[in-house]
Amino acid sequence: MLIKGKRIRNPKIYLGDMEENTLFTIGNILTDNILSILIEKFGLVDPREGEIFFPSPLIGIMCKRNAVGEFIPQKDKPKETAYKAQEWDIKDWGGYSHSGTAYVPYKRFPRKFIDPKEHKLVIRRNPDGDSIVTLDKNFRNNADWPADITFAINLFLEIFEHAQTFKITEENDFIDFTNTQTVNWEILPKGERVWEAFNKKNSTSISPSEQYLIKERFDFIESFKPDSIRKGIGGYTGYLVFEFQDKNLYIFDSILYGEATYIFEDEWENASKLTKKEIINNNLSKDRIIHNKQWQLKLRKHLF
Image (tube, rainbow, N blue to C red; front, side, top):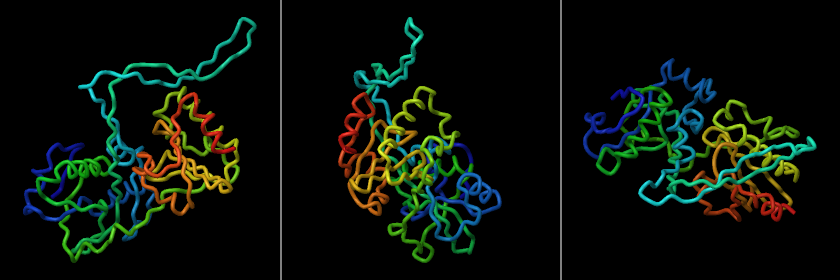
């Protein structure tokens, strides 16, 4: 069934042509219009069967929730004190400039973190021989799945402005998604600074004060001369990894998201396979350093 619109609330009306417990996925046939969207938003000029790619969080709110997760204010609970970093710059009576960072307290509701779904898109072929782009996840048409199905459809609507349902059978479900790896990182050329390499259009949602603090943070890490710097692509856009081979350390941080720096000890082959949930939830990291006035001091202890 063809689904159009910006957002749906209840997927039930769009699944009326399926029997209960039918296995299906969400996708679109690769028409000229869909192909133009794949070129514009993913850089896929010649999409090939089996190719998997991760929607960038910069596409829209659903893609951001899919890649990064979200914080939900708990308005039924008392407000708590949080701190916001702000850059300051003043001149004294002698005309000398002084600058620094202040951590300003403010009240907010406690926030509950919702894990990212981390859905990826894949090029497949349906039983009629059409090339299609679908999610890398299948669903069941039953009462246990409505929230997941709603999220998946809205993700597709945000990217393509319409979506279709495709029934899955043993004959056409030929891709084993569990063993498929995607390329999530690309290495920055030697000598290229992080801030200059970061596409300026990605910083439109960041205030000038935040941009100053982020640049200061990455300049500090770069001052220790990492062996390589990798930037996330696709759904990992905005994330950076600084590699220090002699210390067997990988420092994960983000230009766009998060409130902390994560430090991992392992081979890059293993570190590169970390999911966003594993990074964010701090399941495997050696240390998690909150972005506050103690950040430089704590990070320095790992790098000296």
